[in-house]
Image (tube, rainbow, N blue to C red; front, side):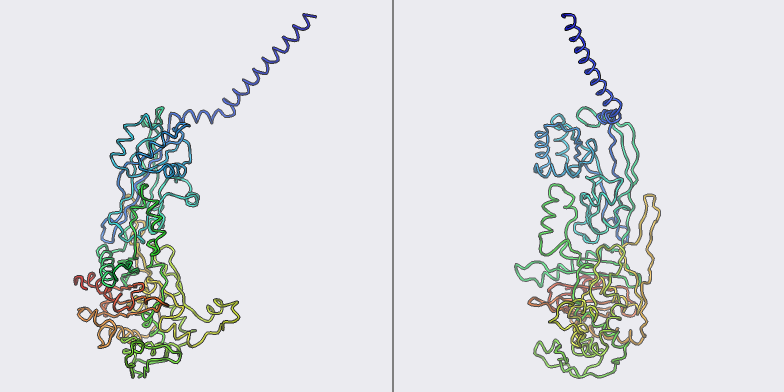
Length: 608
């Protein structure tokens, strides 16, 4: 009996031993066979790290080869998530203190960059030397944290063409999916402007370095190195001096219009070479400083302030702003009137000051006598609403809308280097039917009064400053419209030209020479006529110039002010368009700014 019990106990003992051996063997199989590669990689990851080496982002130059935006070496604070202890509160608290970041900001930066436990996350770029010293002196307190050298964007002229050039920001999830391989979640990418449009050309090709790390996850030895390839360089069509002159002209003149305590005027300036389509200056105000959006210590607060600002400093008014054109539309309406033969340049019209639909001349609204008997040139020079309302109505909206689209309105200009360009609006019968479909109490028919409004640049018609600039280049070129661009060349790191813009005819309007002669004469009369609306601003301008003022009525607010012109009239070199939001009259708000831009271009000195 005792022997039988002993045998049972031995059997139980050996069963337990066998089960234990099976468990150990199973675990060994799990660790060494099934997940052996995984743990081998983890072990290797604890010793060897492959760190991406960011390439030098391409330089952005002005048309004459001057650097506008470049990259420079700087110190970056990086963190390896897998190298941080589990109870890391003390490490992160001390790091946030050194970097002058809140705990939430630091954790947000880590979470955004976390993609791989052993892939460095770049927490703070372009830190100063004191920060570098503080981290290096406290290595033991900051395991997993190290300093690396990285190229950072250097905007050489604060706020210079900021809407056009754009800014960099931390890549988001959608961008990470779109760009794919080569990008990590803590990388910087172009968010707006040229930085975004030419992101992959400017970025270059990543390099890599294989390093051996110590127990604190700090690199101690380089094993291999693959050189990164720098990004392509952009040469813009922008003239640096003219761009600066246009911005300063806008700020200087509008400050003289500003009431004490009022906010800065908003608006845009566009200057274009009509013979090539090259944009020489593009200003949108208010603007912003893209460099502040790179600094981790102020990026969030600065961006939040830009977004909250009701003046919309991130909004590019030059290509996205939609405005009624006011009387700046009249030279284009004039082309349609003459080509449709509803009026001749020599025909006399009795401008009594009020059209059939009640549109009034500005002299009537000011309590002055009507213009009386006038001809085509007089009507443009003095900007008679009555004249253009009458003959625009005779052209009719069906033909008028066709002519306006011929000039490029109602669609993006396709400017090379522009993002999110607005189309504006050319209203017509179909638009009105669709716009008011489902409003049974509203008559959907198109009325002569609607055509009169469009003929003087009022009502629902909308244009962007770049559209108006391109349309005026058509007048300057007598019908030829060149594709507008802000990119002149793209050059690879070896200095080879991979893209070069050549003037490309986008459209050619079939218009009689006599029509161009008459319209140009009328626009010159805006300057030279005794009652020309821009006579006082340009009366001493030594170069023949053709232009047009415009004011856009805004309900319960001051009007927008326009001025558009080209010079010299016999061989145009420059088209300038200016809009000042709520600047009241175009002659008082926009024309003086355009005068200063023309002065700067022709070397005549800035004048008020």
